[in-house]
Image (tube, rainbow, N blue to C red; front, top):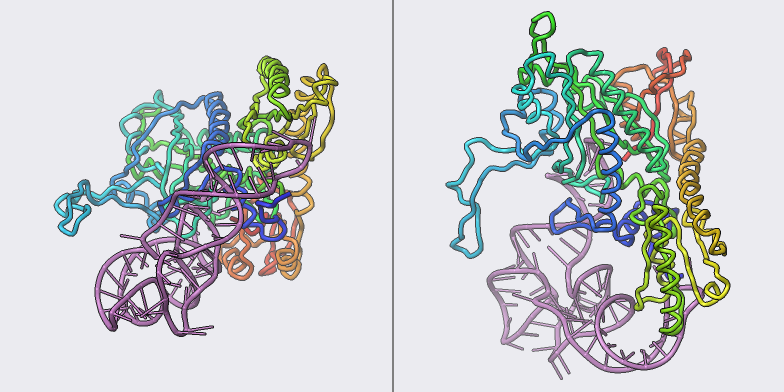
Length: 490
RNA sequence: AUGGGAAUAGUUCAGCAAGGUUAGAACGCUUGCUUUGGGAGCAAGAGGCCGCAGGUUCGAAUCCUGCUUCCCAUACCA
């Protein structure tokens, strides 16, 4: 087989890049750091959006849309928020171009904006400024709003899907009348993300909270889900923040409670992005290409005809079209690859590269025997299936592949989850076979920073319900009550 | 931003040291024939302001200067 991918073992990040390009998911654009998401990649994102959007609505949220631009003055109102994002903001300073004397066009210096606009890196500020007018009474709460949008963060170094200057995401912004209710909301949404990751992406995730260092700028608590990629590095897949009254205070959002007393509103925000595409790619794919979970594949089955003559093709097409109707009835999505320009072998390799969960081939032999060749992408196993058993086989495979790729990822994570009691062990694991490391930590920012400097590993999360176990911090030897999860991360 | 490297066909690159006619290859693309159960073969063809601006020279992809952009390493994270 002609190779188009770099082997995963040889160069993991090269493998990832090749895969994104060759599977036709996305490519770099003429704009530095910004990607073009191609139709095949975008249709996976659309599937993710559809499922998540349904989950948000089921949990009582509604969609709205807020502006792309944020006045500079809004941005500075929440101190730690500015600090967190200031270094990576795109800023609009002018509103007009003019013809240049040197030819071409230039920014018209007379068209300077009175107040500069920030291209949103996240929308807390513009949304909370709006909420001030929406919230007057406890009767206006809770306010449960989600937005699907693009945001811009001027990243130095970008990688397709994992870190791009512009990315697509959803951001939920909720307002509550009590601390307790806001905390519950933040936890509820991280659990929504976790079940989406596990049931749809087929990626096992750990749920927990961030250490102070890794917390969102402006949050009092950040909940997160973390997954382990095949190279042993962690990927943050989603976050949900308890913002306390920080934004309500910054934007003066108050409500009258039942006792007719004025109170500041409690807030949360939560988001997942096109980075989930990166997670999906890295969690399951192999040296032959992408491996997609049936629940998110643009189509679940591809049908490849094998024929010599036009008559043969016509005969086979009739039978394939009958099959397509049966697939439709059974809600299995499909593509009949009837291109005459490519040979079967080429198509096999191409669809494997694109991760289609099941491939069905039919040639003269199958036609005569009334059978189909069925190949599953996750294990690459091939099987001849009789026509009468085909649909039930496919229904079984959709479920089985979904479960199998989750199980494989879970087994991998298990085999790469360690406990370290000494700093030497800790460093040794990171150097030899990285993964999640459970270790004791003294709870200080300084220690986490030292460990990060020396090993590049950070605390990915503090487990939700940690097993209480007295121990000593691997770095300082100070007492610790439970272990936290360390890893190198993306 | 600092340090290092690069810019030539759609893509990956050769050519540059020692300047000299119509600037090459592979892959991809187009057309035809042939083939089709794991990325076929043959033939013909299209495709380039050699990153931009200036300089040296009879002559510049090649030498010199300036600029721009990209890539690799460090900081950032959804």
